[in-house]
Structures are given as structure tokens and as C-alpha cells.
Length: 114
Length: 113
Image: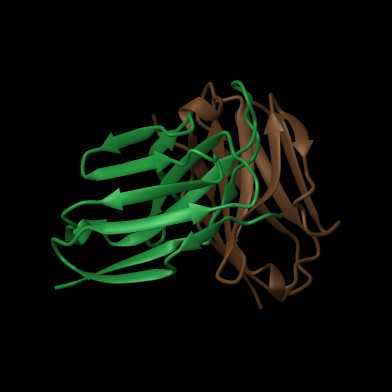
């Protein structure tokens, strides 16, 4: 199936730094979601975006739904050790409330150096 | 709310054996999804159900894979016969529609030797 292009693949940062990652697609999505996965666990939803141009925050996390509907960005401000993990973007094509499958990016590994 | 419950958490089996993975979705959710995660291919959608009915199984890799949802509170993913390349983490997720996101279980790590 189609994959989203997520970058960077990994990030090595210092505690307290800001983080930016993005996801792009060759086709349009109507919903963008960002998930975080900790080792040995399933992905957990962080932020959901439903409208082109939408900017949504969840604590230190901010995500944006690109105007073209083909991309999305996630920023984490003032990183802390518990931010370590794999971050996934996911796109959904369906309109309305119907539940169809999500297409996932391959993830961004965030590593925080002490 | 106990979340999405998957069992077993780990499964090690020999090539050729039948494997059955189980999932209990969140009560009230009407959609259920099976995903497979590998290093090479990331998270891939295998099949999903709406109101217990399979909607799209185009992601199921081969006829060796089958999934059922006999009622709203239970689903199985079966691999028969299993092969080493089936080794992966298999996730089940449930949802009440995209506006509420999908909730994933903790996964089943399958190793076929």
C-alpha cells in the first residue's frame, strides 16, 4: 500500500531543544494524525487535524495540516526525556465520519542525549 | 476503559504451524483494524471491519492470512501455515469514526522459526 514520506528518519537532540518533523504525500488526505509509539507498546494518538491549514496544539506539541492537504508538520518544544520514542504521521482519505484504514509514515525516531 | 486488548503478547511458533491472534476492541467502537509492523515496511493495514463486516482485505498478504469478527467484541487474525517472513508485530486498533482517532492495542510480537 501507499506510504507517506516522513522525515527525518531519526533525530538526536539535546534535552530542551525544539523538534520538527514532517510528512508528505503525492496525494491528498482529508485527515492527518500524529501518533507516538513507545517500545513494546502500540501507537498512541497525539494530535488529529481535520481541515487544511489547521494548526492544533497539545501541550508542548503543535501540528499543522498543510494547505495543499498533501503534508503535515509536528513540532515539539523544549524536549524532555519522556519525549523519546517513534513518532508516526498518518493520513486518512475518507470524508464524513466513516472509518477507513489509515496510511502511516515510516516514523521518526527521536533520541534525546543527556 | 481497558483499551484494546490483544493476546497473546508474544508468540513463538515453528514454520508450518497455525497461529491465531486475538483482539477485543473497546466497547462501543464500531470499526476494527488489523495492522502489521516490520522494520522494513513500517505499519501496514491488513484488513478492517465496520460493524463486524469485513470492508477491505486488500492488505492481507496471502491466502494464508484470514481474519474474522464473529461479534462486536472479538476478532481473530489467523495465519495458516505460518512462515518465517510472517514474523512481525501485529496490532489491532478500534475506532468510533475517524474524528475520534484510532486506539491501538499493545500488539502481538510473532516470531516464526
